[in-house]
Structure formats: C-alpha cells, structure tokens
Amino acid sequence: MLFRSRILRPLGLELSHKPAPWKWSLCSKTKDGIPTKKKKGVVYEIPCGSCEEVYVGETLRTVDDRVKEHKRHTAKGEVLQSAVAEHAREKEHTIAWDSARIVDRAGGWTQRKVKEALHIACHKSRGSPLMNKDDGMKISNVWKALVGRSADG
Image (tube, rainbow, N blue to C red; front, side, top):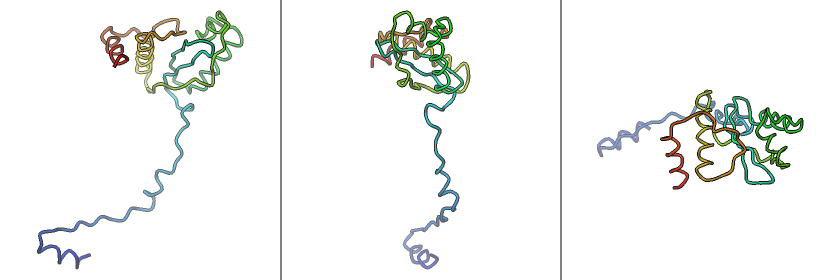
C-alpha cells in the first residue's frame, strides 16, 4: 500500500485506507425480526367479514392478544365490552378475525390515542363505515381537516 501511495502522491492523488470489517459486524444483522402481529403498542383494524365496516382500536399489548379478547367478548355476547362484539351480535355478521392488521405503531399512551383518533377520522373522511362507538380521543378540527385532505390526494 505504501508503494502505491508514493507513486500516486506526485500526481496529486491520495489513497485512503479502510480497515477490514470486524468479524462481529458482519454477523450483527442476523437476528430475526419480531413478527408483525407480535409487536406491541399498536393501532389496529378488524374488518367485518359480512359488510364493509371496520373497527379501529389501539393497545399496548400485541394485536393478537387484543383480537383474542374481542373474540372472547363476541363468543360470550358481551356487547358492552367490545364494539366488535356488539356489531357481530346486533347485525348477525361474521368478523374476519384473520384479516386483523396493524395500521400504525406508537409507544406512548397519548401517541397511540392520537393515532387511533386520526385513523378513525381518516375512515370517516373517506366515508368508510366503522364499528367504533366513538371517535376516540378528541382532536383538533385542524388535524381532522388535514387527514381529510390527505385522504383525498
């Protein structure tokens, strides 16, 4: 390397030397990621299998755990515990449990509540029917207007 540096220096060129990668840095990205439905602190959607309605919710736990609770409430007819159970019971619809999906992530309680409310507002601005009993956390109409605008364009 020194020989090449001496030859190139009179031409106004400099060589830079980069150390070889350390053996552990080559193996650092081999760890498997967490499966999507096992991630915590999420905003999720559960669609109805019989109509176009969707339930938007948030949980600190995994979406799998929360969906199991909704299933249990639905099976036991506990309509006061879950809007999904109420929808299934009152309309005699089948819920598409396997199609439940994560739509957003947030670690803090406030962030999850705001994101849940924004996703609900986005569905409403598009005219999508919801199973939710309320709009979630009260958010400014300015944010709702921005959500409506982003849904349009």
